[in-house]
Length: 273
Image (tube, rainbow, N blue to C red; front, side, top):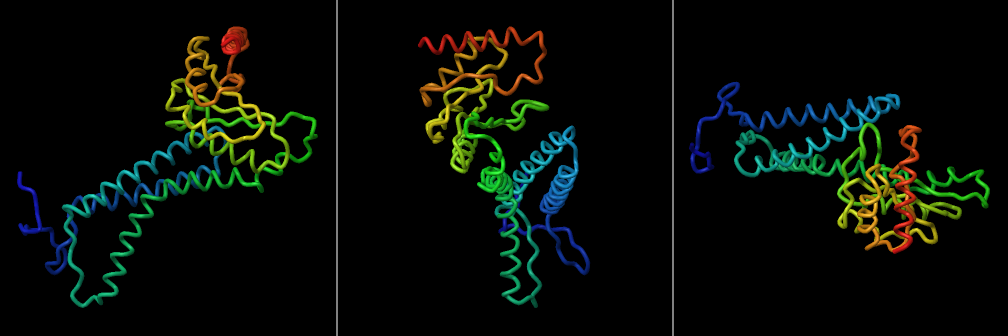
């Protein structure tokens, strides 16, 4: 197999009056990008108009398309900088126009690579802002205990989106407590079933004042598994309460005695250490 290099001219597909066109892979990556972006816009519009039953599925589709678009952009840029055939600009095109064309091309690559990050940060800024948080506290008497439950999503799977650690959760907890115009008594933080030392390490950055922390350590897998997760968390957060990973709304009445017994057994074991 012979690889193409600039020193080895080779025939390229021609269009029109003998004019060469882009190589087939560049063309394919271009249209793949167009299709993916169209799919992201469509899934976003459908998500805004959807009901709760379909929202989780559409959100997963939208995020998946975003990740694939990001990967395709990296491949496309790598191919562009290495082996791609780029037809020369027309001889009568002004130099300034050529520079603008190249700048717009690389600007597109920058947008494709940075766009997935903007979605997360925009959501974060919106839901952690004082303007969003303050109305939630209105009408709640000062003597009533007030707290927040942060969740990684539990339907149709948990977590809804895989996370490497608690970095985003800790950032959110810090921001919403700081922007709450009243006393915050507790914050419930999620834990995954596989939570380990690396997952829990961001707890060292938790800054929520006097609010009590409850970790979602109970995962319906027994006391010992709960204690394993607690041990990983305790290295970075010495004091915390224990709880179910979310709520008990999707558990049956028959399951409750066993789940509560595991929770109590785990709490007793931790309090004695």
